[in-house]
Image (cartoon, rainbow, N blue to C red; front, side, top):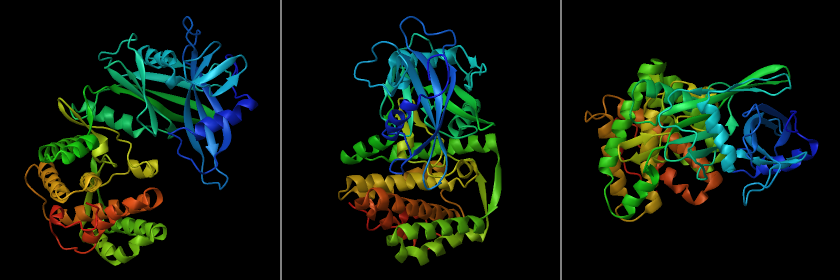
Length: 462
């Protein structure tokens, strides 16, 4: 591909695939990805770059796998330079006379992303086979094209670029065809006036043609950069290590989640599902997990009984966060903010957009407290965890406590989450598998109505 025509030079395929396979955000590591296609999108600077700046375009890389397990689409942000690149940054590949770099790692190139948003550019396919890109601006806030971009290297599944202390553009690396849940939910919560999430300044989307079919996906979102924000997981571990209580923070997190759930309920509505259908799904997941992690076998009968308690009635379901834990929260001077509404990454888009019980999110945070306590260990960790659980539930229920049937529903969702955790730990961190197994020992033992934060969680490391 030259700066004037689409396509990928044949000699560029191998170095590009090597770079993508080594990227932290690539989801197919170890699966021998196979190159399928490369679709460039319209140039962000249709009239050419300004001064000595690189020319920038986005592109969609399509990969498959030898076992036929599916096709994945990845977004590339590309900066074309005919002179020296940024110090210490290696090009992804060479295209004619240009070296092509990752634009998110090139500060001058990253300026083009913000400028395109501020200009609300609508960049169309001009007949050369390139796809279209459209930028949508919802709120200018303090956005300014003079903001200095800085690459943030702390994420894995996406890539974020900070612009001063004002904004962050998050580029979605693995693209999902259709609307992005994080954009959709942020927009709805902003429209509802919810203060517990960042402001969505805008987003970008693309359409392109592949084998005669027009495909589309959201590419990025620009949100408020939360000043002096501290990761919730880091804050919790720091407080526990220092011997300080986290109760007030846990209660505030519970209140924040309740506000979010109320706003999502209003924006997207509610429905009901037979509890027995949900129990069947959880039981099937347990069977699949046990095939991977034999450690689950002793808990099978008790867990199936636990899930069966959901069959006693209907479950109210709605849009939820879907992957709620301490790492999805930020503590700021103005209070707690909740981030990343894309749901559990291992689930399909259809699963993540489907209505679910609010107890899915509540259970996720309770499991996170258990992990925090186990990570630090020590004589006081169990008491710290139990105090956090009680305070969080108190905050979420506004002091009313769990109502009839709630404790069994919550325990079933906790057990379902812990089953997922066992599989994850077996595959990635075998030394940690005792944490979710310890939780399951308690959750599978009793299925009578009780308050889950009073259940013992023996077996987790201290």
